[in-house]
Length: 368
Ligand code: ADE
Ligand code: ZN
Image (cartoon, rainbow, N blue to C red; front, side, top):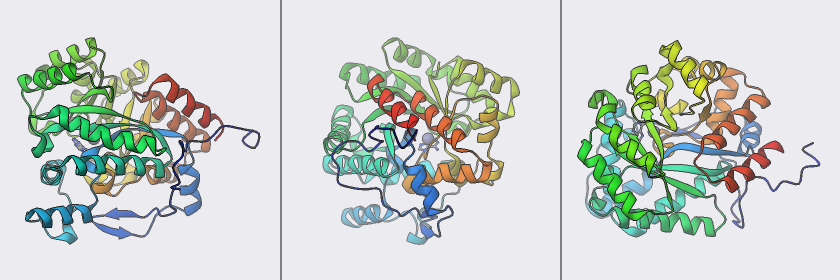
């Protein structure tokens, strides 16, 4: 079947760049020996897929941050050796404020966005929904339109160079007020930028408390205006956060959602309604949700019929690549090629890509 297949694969367009064979993971800022076999990594790079849970804030290369900080005369938050060693989600989000604060020009934002597309292509993904949370980007506060234009410039240049298409999910922070949420949505609806596909919410639910009711009206309005809705829940909150994401925020997709596993009725609801979870195994370990990959519930959720997909969350900062996330899960949970194909299909189905992109990716997947 595969030999007769004439599908073009997932490599979009004209770019001359090829995926590199390097698949080391960086843990706490240090390159470690790779954990997965090269042939498996190559095979999983070729797996047609989408990425649906990844933040632009998590795509800074540490060397670039160091260079920008030196140039701006800004001190590093901690020594280079421990720059990417995070004590948990609160510490991580604080680091994002520092890092994003350095991206003060249009050129830097465009360059970062272009780099995101390059990374996506090198993992063999044919599309991504990319989360951007304006609260982290100090230099752009009060300039939403300019900020989206700068990101769009990088993503458009990337597409023109044959790199994959990307949709933007503009994100609220859990600790924002209801008024701030309404204001962000008003700004998005005034712009109607074609790059923006969804309203998102991320941040620390443990620090914010129960905020579903606070954001319900804005999420309802976003849906009525034609935006998709994606909600971080069940990472720093338990199953109750996932329930609020479904019932109060009417999430089309849940980012993480893994702690739903603690409530069997909720798992059944996710499976019945086929509400997709964008799961990020390495992130959950690095940020302390689970101690070991073996403890991670992705396989139990999958077996319960939940539409789970595999993602990186904050790839550069936590040292994850999309293909190594697939490879690690496949090794630990003994997934077959058919299981992997189903996971990749979930990622495409769960994405906010248009029908043309989805059809192309699903066609390529059938040939894998
Ligand atoms: N923003 C970036 N990464 C995040 C995560 N893992 N959880 C919540 N907010 C985030
Ligand atoms: Zn996330």
